[in-house]
Image 1 (cartoon, one colour):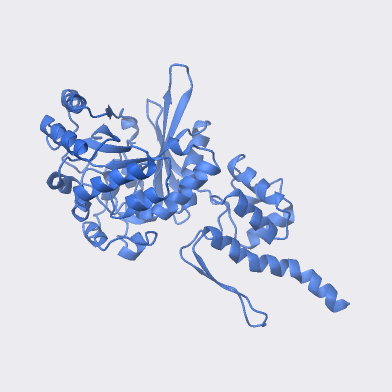
Image 2: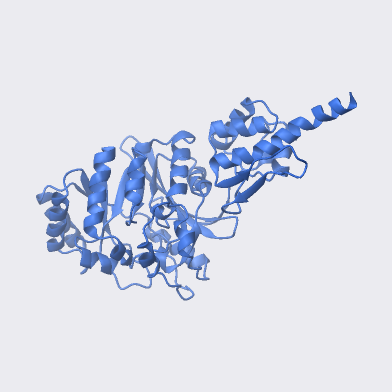
Length: 441
């Protein structure tokens, strides 16, 4: 009888210990070695990335329910966890007042955390745009921007411009983010928490999310898709209210299309021909314009979602009406379903590029419209708040970041082509940055 009592007392704890590895593996990359009945056998977890292996933020309601049952709790405790994370936005496990103290303590002792970071700094523009600098667990800094737009009825559309990487390895010549170097990919919860931080500072719901902050989303596609799922399913932001931007990474547009998301793909084009694009976007050497256009056409056919082409206007470089004609011809060549978003250059330190005059912008737009191209001009927001991507981080994080190995950057892309070597070869570390920030997403 004593032996039976002992076995009954340890079984729930052993079951929880065995199952925790299984739960984590459902949401993170972990290799498990199954337990056996021998005393020497144990469950080994090999973590693919650190330090955030046991993070609640980003988990679905089903995963949280499984987590609760693995700890010997009723499954409804998982629903309570979901409510606390995504409705009440509680930041610490010990503040989960609806959850039994014993369960909270067990979660903490097992290494679980909510996964929220602190806001290191913020700047506010006269137009209401707010840029936040979030300090991650490893002390890296990442930017996110909240852009409010009020309509005629007084309601506010709040857009969160989120980052997908700490820095960026692609080093587009006009971008401040690339000048600050590259450190690592963000985890899914580190992307999600940017939206939550924007909602807190504005005390309002985010209605739109654009993956247009620091980094190249397609080089971190696995975590971007995880964040996209969470934002859609758990935070309840519609897929059509989200946009994923890319400068173009071989094979990844096809992979994104296979997920059949109802979100917009925004391709950072910036030039109507391959030669000029290589000058502005060094990584374009590994992804010819014709191949990009074919992939964008296939994306439209696969998802029925039009592709938006981002075109940053640089005075005297790519803003001539002849460039507009060439751009129109390129788009017509590859069929319907396209939209052009003109972006007047946001001035940054350390570059010779200049913002075009309004007359040049209008002429470029008119030429596209005369060729039956749908076009809009992005309203510049947050210039006085140091708000272009990467500039605020460069002000605070002076030390240049380490350029990673090819394995670090492509770990989340199964079928990335060897041509990424050409992309990384254009990314040498920058000297220490001491310039003032200037930020506009």
